[in-house]
Each structure stands twice: as structure tokens, then as C-alpha cells.
Length: 356
Image (cartoon, rainbow, N blue to C red; front, side, top):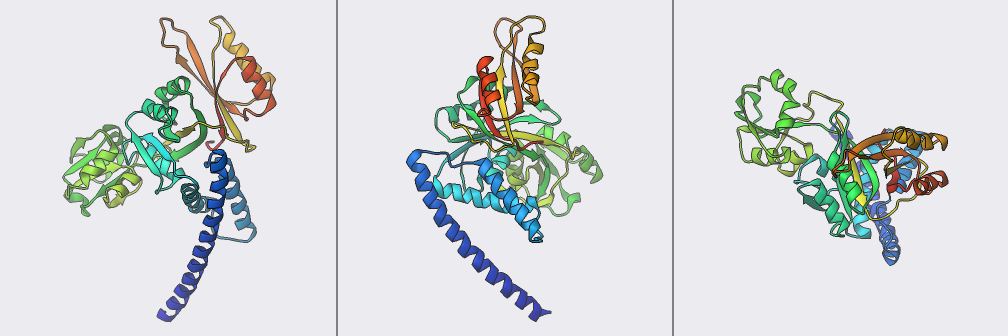
């Protein structure tokens, strides 16, 4: 058995050596691409191009009988893309902080662990940071499949001159982290109250409901405190446990296993068409009977598929509203460009449709 293991490990080492050589070769080309982009100040983040590569490689793997799934290929290459972008141009990513939040986790899933991150303590602050050119990208939550839309994100899209350039859909999993390997000896549980209440089934199953609960400002803070308490535990994100080196005892403990959040990436440029795009706009209607119906009919008449519509108050001395609308297509599609201009809509961005 030992001889066979040595033989197999030798083959793995040889393959790893070849992978490293090819990665270095790829990064040399990436640096050349970066020089060309820097000459024209072209954006280095191209989600539609990255998706195209992942789809091509997934199809190639299937054709050749490979064992890697699309998710596994994506996990590998998203990190390669992130490193490639950092070689092309170092750019800062603002996100809703603090460090270790689910928004941080979403940002890292696209920009990698080695990117330059700037945690900002509120959503509007992220928009200000990007609008003021203090960061190239911003990552914020826009809706949750159980809690609904994030109103301040919609309001900030209307207020600040930024564009949506990508979306991220992420399953939200609460983890249970502690240095105490024997659950029965845990004496304190740290968590944001919302996270704690979303894991009551797990806590009941393991007899932890009677353990002292200490609320924190965030699940990230819970992990930070638990890292200094050998008899404590945290309900937190996986990334927070990793950041503060708290061992994970359970990775997914939430009661609702279908909890998903949609995040958006904002910046200052227009993305190119991918053939599978979504456009977001702001529309206003006159305050009269049938006005909204007339607006929606214009989408139907042009065969434009609506994906979401949300009303928001104007926040003046009336009860009038404006509408945030998502629909299929790209601003460069003639029928969409005509509709936006005809109705004097505010275009918020066209981007790869990544959330179903």
C-alpha cells in the first residue's frame, strides 16, 4: 500500500508542477492584457467574460469525461480570475462591513481572498465610497428571499451616480464555531439576535437553549469574541470563523435551509452584452388612475420580460412613489434603449443575469 501511495503522490506532484508552470504562463499573458487595459482605463472586471470561460470549460470537461462539476470548476477559476485581476490592476472593493459579514463573503467569492477590501459600516456609505472614486467596486445586499428587498439599497441606487455591473446570489448559512470540542461544556453563545433566532432548531437539538446567550452587533463580532473565549461559541458566517481562526463544529445550522440573499456589485462603467442579461431601472408614473398599467403595458408591447417591480416612497410631503424594475435584456438592445429614452427612465445598469 505504501509503495502504491508513493507512486500516486509522485504523479500528483508531477501534475501540480505542470499546473504551476501553466498558471505562471497564464499570468504572464494576463499582465500583458493589464497593460493594454490600463492604457485605455478599461474595466478589469468582466463578469460576462468570466461566465463565458466557465461555461466553455464546463462543456469541455463534460465532452472529455471529466469528473469536475460546474460548481467545482467555477470555484477553482473564480480564484484564478481574482488573482488575474490583481495582477492587471490593484483596485479597492468596498463592502458592507464589518469584516467577516456575509457581504464580505459575497465580495470574496468574486474578488478573491487577496483583493484590497474596505469595510464600510452602512450601505449608503458603500455607495458614497464608490461614487467618490475611493473604491472601484462596492458590494451590498439588495434582497433576501425571505425578508424581501433592502430599501436603503434601492434608495441609494436612485441617489448616487453608480451602475450595477454584476449580481451575486449566495446561500446564507450560519455556522457554529468554538474552541470547545465538547458541546456540553459550552457556557456562552455569542451571536447577532437575528442569527441566533434563525438557529433555534439546532440549539434545541443539541441542548443549547439554556446556555447563556450574549447578543452582539454582528455575527462577525460574535466570532471575534468567541476566539478569545475557550468556553464560548459563536453563531457566525463561515468566513468570520476563518478570519478569527475559530474551529467550525457545524457548518450549516440555520432552520431555513433555503435562505438566499442577492447582492449587487456597483461601479462606474457599463458592462458588455452577454446574451443573458438583466437591466435595472427607476421609473416614475403620473399620479392618475391606470398610470402603472400603462407603463407595464409598454414592456408587454415590446415583449420585454419583467422580473421584479418594487415601489418606494418619494420621501417628500406626498404619498407618491417611484418604481424599481428589473427586466431581461441589455441597454444596448434597441427596444430597451428606446423604451428607457421614451419614458425618461433612470438606467441603473445592465449586467449578467446570475440569479434565477
